[in-house]
Image (cartoon, rainbow, N blue to C red; front, side):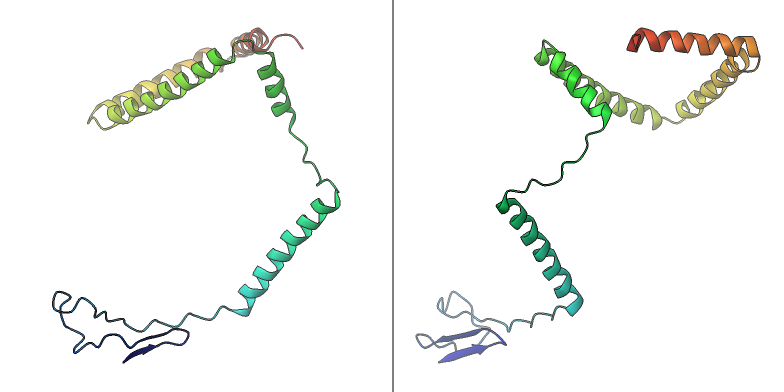
Length: 167
Protein backbone atom coordinates (compact mmCIF):
# COMPACT_ATOMS: atom_id res chain seq x y z
CA UNK A 1 0.00 0.00 0.00
CA UNK A 2 1.43 3.38 -1.03
CA UNK A 3 0.80 6.38 1.20
CA UNK A 4 1.85 9.93 0.36
CA UNK A 5 1.35 12.57 3.01
CA UNK A 6 1.73 16.35 2.99
CA UNK A 7 0.59 18.96 5.47
CA UNK A 8 -2.88 19.08 3.92
CA UNK A 9 -2.89 16.29 1.33
CA UNK A 10 -3.22 12.56 1.85
CA UNK A 11 -3.36 10.13 -1.05
CA UNK A 12 -3.57 6.43 -0.50
CA UNK A 13 -3.88 3.59 -2.96
CA UNK A 14 -4.11 -0.08 -2.28
CA UNK A 15 -4.73 -1.25 -5.84
CA UNK A 16 -1.14 -1.04 -7.09
CA UNK A 17 2.39 -1.26 -5.81
CA UNK A 18 5.44 0.43 -7.31
CA UNK A 19 8.71 -1.41 -7.11
CA UNK A 20 11.03 1.57 -7.71
CA UNK A 21 10.36 5.24 -8.31
CA UNK A 22 12.50 5.18 -11.50
CA UNK A 23 10.50 2.48 -13.28
CA UNK A 24 9.46 3.46 -16.80
CA UNK A 25 5.81 4.01 -17.55
CA UNK A 26 5.94 1.43 -20.33
CA UNK A 27 6.72 -1.36 -17.87
CA UNK A 28 4.14 -0.24 -15.30
CA UNK A 29 1.44 2.15 -16.52
CA UNK A 30 -0.27 2.10 -13.12
CA UNK A 31 2.71 3.46 -11.20
CA UNK A 32 2.83 7.20 -10.67
CA UNK A 33 5.30 8.81 -8.34
CA UNK A 34 4.34 12.10 -6.70
CA UNK A 35 6.72 14.42 -4.95
CA UNK A 36 5.68 16.06 -1.72
CA UNK A 37 3.95 19.39 -2.07
CA UNK A 38 5.58 22.45 -0.56
CA UNK A 39 3.71 24.07 2.26
CA UNK A 40 1.93 27.32 1.48
CA UNK A 41 3.53 30.45 2.89
CA UNK A 42 1.54 32.01 5.66
CA UNK A 43 -0.03 35.32 4.77
CA UNK A 44 1.00 38.23 6.88
CA UNK A 45 -1.54 39.67 9.22
CA UNK A 46 -1.25 43.03 7.43
CA UNK A 47 -2.32 41.40 4.15
CA UNK A 48 -5.25 39.72 5.88
CA UNK A 49 -6.38 43.05 7.35
CA UNK A 50 -6.20 44.75 3.94
CA UNK A 51 -8.20 41.93 2.37
CA UNK A 52 -10.84 42.06 5.09
CA UNK A 53 -11.22 45.83 4.79
CA UNK A 54 -11.52 45.51 1.01
CA UNK A 55 -14.34 42.98 1.33
CA UNK A 56 -16.06 45.10 3.99
CA UNK A 57 -15.97 48.07 1.59
CA UNK A 58 -17.52 45.98 -1.18
CA UNK A 59 -20.15 44.80 1.29
CA UNK A 60 -21.02 48.41 2.17
CA UNK A 61 -21.41 49.30 -1.50
CA UNK A 62 -23.70 46.34 -2.01
CA UNK A 63 -25.71 47.35 1.02
CA UNK A 64 -26.11 50.87 -0.33
CA UNK A 65 -27.32 49.57 -3.67
CA UNK A 66 -29.68 47.11 -2.01
CA UNK A 67 -31.34 49.82 0.06
CA UNK A 68 -31.99 51.92 -3.03
CA UNK A 69 -29.65 54.81 -2.30
CA UNK A 70 -28.03 55.97 -5.52
CA UNK A 71 -24.25 56.20 -5.53
CA UNK A 72 -22.80 59.68 -5.84
CA UNK A 73 -22.57 60.68 -9.50
CA UNK A 74 -19.31 62.07 -10.75
CA UNK A 75 -19.38 65.34 -12.61
CA UNK A 76 -18.51 64.97 -16.27
CA UNK A 77 -16.05 67.60 -17.50
CA UNK A 78 -17.41 70.29 -19.79
CA UNK A 79 -15.40 69.21 -22.85
CA UNK A 80 -16.87 65.68 -22.61
CA UNK A 81 -20.37 67.14 -22.61
CA UNK A 82 -19.53 69.28 -25.64
CA UNK A 83 -18.12 66.19 -27.42
CA UNK A 84 -21.29 64.26 -26.65
CA UNK A 85 -23.43 67.11 -27.98
CA UNK A 86 -21.33 67.33 -31.14
CA UNK A 87 -21.59 63.54 -31.64
CA UNK A 88 -25.38 63.70 -31.23
CA UNK A 89 -25.57 66.39 -33.93
CA UNK A 90 -23.63 64.28 -36.48
CA UNK A 91 -25.94 62.93 -39.19
CA UNK A 92 -23.64 60.33 -40.79
CA UNK A 93 -21.99 58.59 -37.85
CA UNK A 94 -20.78 55.74 -40.07
CA UNK A 95 -18.74 58.12 -42.24
CA UNK A 96 -17.26 59.90 -39.22
CA UNK A 97 -16.35 56.57 -37.61
CA UNK A 98 -14.73 55.40 -40.85
CA UNK A 99 -12.78 58.65 -41.04
CA UNK A 100 -11.54 58.18 -37.47
CA UNK A 101 -10.44 54.60 -38.20
CA UNK A 102 -8.68 55.72 -41.41
CA UNK A 103 -6.94 58.50 -39.46
CA UNK A 104 -5.69 56.07 -36.83
CA UNK A 105 -4.37 53.73 -39.54
CA UNK A 106 -2.67 56.65 -41.32
CA UNK A 107 -1.09 57.78 -38.04
CA UNK A 108 0.16 54.25 -37.37
CA UNK A 109 1.60 54.01 -40.89
CA UNK A 110 3.31 57.39 -40.62
CA UNK A 111 4.97 56.41 -37.34
CA UNK A 112 6.30 53.29 -39.06
CA UNK A 113 7.61 55.42 -41.94
CA UNK A 114 9.26 57.88 -39.56
CA UNK A 115 10.93 55.08 -37.59
CA UNK A 116 12.20 53.57 -40.88
CA UNK A 117 13.65 56.95 -41.93
CA UNK A 118 15.18 57.35 -38.48
CA UNK A 119 17.17 54.14 -38.98
CA UNK A 120 18.92 55.48 -42.10
CA UNK A 121 22.48 56.71 -41.39
CA UNK A 122 22.54 60.40 -42.48
CA UNK A 123 18.87 61.34 -42.88
CA UNK A 124 18.03 62.02 -39.18
CA UNK A 125 20.93 64.44 -38.78
CA UNK A 126 20.07 66.31 -42.00
CA UNK A 127 16.39 66.55 -41.01
CA UNK A 128 17.38 67.84 -37.58
CA UNK A 129 19.52 70.57 -39.16
CA UNK A 130 16.65 71.53 -41.48
CA UNK A 131 14.29 71.75 -38.47
CA UNK A 132 16.72 73.91 -36.49
CA UNK A 133 17.22 76.20 -39.49
CA UNK A 134 13.48 76.60 -40.13
CA UNK A 135 12.81 77.26 -36.44
CA UNK A 136 15.45 80.01 -36.43
CA UNK A 137 14.05 81.55 -39.63
CA UNK A 138 10.47 81.45 -38.28
CA UNK A 139 11.51 83.02 -34.96
CA UNK A 140 13.47 85.79 -36.73
CA UNK A 141 10.69 86.51 -39.21
CA UNK A 142 7.69 86.37 -36.83
CA UNK A 143 8.79 86.70 -33.20
CA UNK A 144 11.70 89.12 -32.94
CA UNK A 145 9.99 92.40 -33.89
CA UNK A 146 6.74 93.67 -32.38
CA UNK A 147 4.74 94.41 -35.60
CA UNK A 148 5.38 90.93 -37.01
CA UNK A 149 4.56 89.36 -33.63
CA UNK A 150 1.21 91.20 -33.49
CA UNK A 151 0.47 90.14 -37.08
CA UNK A 152 1.18 86.49 -36.19
CA UNK A 153 -1.09 86.67 -33.13
CA UNK A 154 -3.84 88.17 -35.33
CA UNK A 155 -3.45 85.35 -37.90
CA UNK A 156 -3.67 82.73 -35.15
CA UNK A 157 -6.82 84.33 -33.70
CA UNK A 158 -8.45 84.46 -37.16
CA UNK A 159 -7.64 80.80 -37.78
CA UNK A 160 -9.05 79.78 -34.40
CA UNK A 161 -12.31 81.67 -35.03
CA UNK A 162 -12.59 80.05 -38.49
CA UNK A 163 -12.23 76.60 -36.97
CA UNK A 164 -14.28 77.02 -33.78
CA UNK A 165 -16.66 79.76 -34.89
CA UNK A 166 -17.86 82.80 -32.98
CA UNK A 167 -18.95 82.20 -29.41
